Image 1 (tube, rainbow, N blue to C red):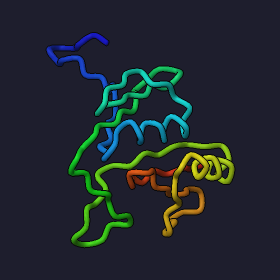
Image 2: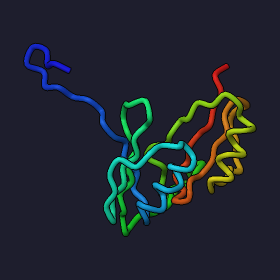
Image 3: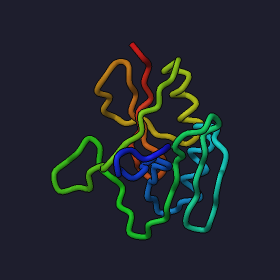
Image 4: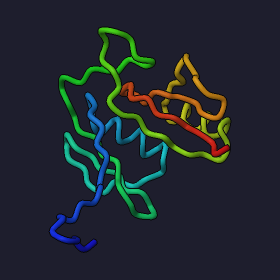
Length: 129
């Protein structure tokens, strides 16, 4: 990607999620998404999508605090979440639960299901309407 008019080249390469145990959370997303490990260290794991594009990495953070969702005053709020498009919401939900996801009690939309990964990060499975 060439730079234009003095603007430096910027390309999103990875989204990083903090977790109390990076390898354990990477294992969950490996099962969920079917992605392969690109790089693994004791406190850092990066998964790569099969078709290329930004990867998903996990970093061990000893002081990690699970976010509350929906947000509640005085509690750790989520800073980001993943939206994962699926063809079949029910089948994808069963797959997510089998991989270790937990469905959120509060579900705000008909075409979206909110789940929590093992570290408590919310993620959404959704179907295009």
